[in-house]
Amino acid sequence: MRIVSDQLARADARVDWSDLKAEAMQLQEELKSDVIWQEDAPRAIKCQKRLSVIDDKLSEYNGFVARIQECSELLELAISENDSTIYHDIFEDLGRLETELSEYLYRLMMTGECDRNGCFIEIRAGSGGTESCDWVQMLSRMYERWAISRSYEVKLVDDVKGDQAGLKSATLQVNGEYAYGLAQHESGVHRFVRVSPFDANGKRHTSFVSVQVYPAGEEGDGDNSSSINEADLKIEYMRSSGAGGQHVNKTESAVRIVHIPTGITVQCQNERSQHSNRATALRMLAARLLQREMQTRAKERADRHEVLPENAWGSQIRSYVLQPYQMVKDLRTGLERSDVGAILDGDINSFLEASLMHSSKNK
Image (tube, rainbow, N blue to C red; front, side, top):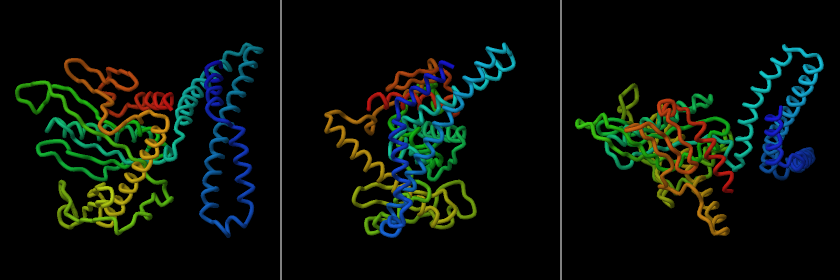
């Protein structure tokens, strides 16, 4: 009981529940009036969404409070009646509750404006030639397996094949609640060391891959792509590269979009039609522009406090070593694990959670 009670106390320390309840009551009163719907419908919709988020938070918190109270009462009953069956049931319930509360506490750390959203994960080969391209493909598989393990929807929206093997770049779209919040700290350079299967001399190679994670717009919230000025875009259509198929390589279905004011370029070729590729590319561009805006605001806040924001582009964040020993080490949190195979199969939650803790402490 002490563990789950301590976890709930930590949740209480993170959120002012009385303020949330007061905000919910204020929003309810505001939405009761027909005036807001008639005079400012966009604000009414925004208030309704905020109220829904608060209601979900309060409902989840109250659910944990009720379950802990129930376990406490059952424990008292088990002690008074000396019933081993009740003891067994309580310990099972407490075990599940501890796991759920642990996950819940990590979600409470994700308070950013886009943390509940899905995301795009863009992976690009750096130095290392063919070995680096193979590393892109391995990381793409790792993130795909991680997303599937969390029951997220994931798809490869763009990839560029390597000259000999692997991929020069890959972009994954991950849809699911808190996908961005969990994956956001993966942005940075990932270093990979192993004896290369592409080296006839069996030498050890070091390669580097850059990963960038962008927040996707909320489903049905316009993902900001509709607000992009078409005059600011240079759109090119081309034939898709790949293994072939009914449309691949036969029609100009691949789309590349350049945002002229910023120079940001996105590309999509893995959807079934030019229209779908264009829509996905616009969502990718909207995500990149949103990330750029968030980074600008973060830098402004950091400048005010005379500190540098974390995860600057190009910073090395994690090292994966397969030879001469096996070790994955996060250079920010210090977390080390030797089960490299499991990690490359998508078991990366411990790294994501450690990064959340690290980032939360530095806020």
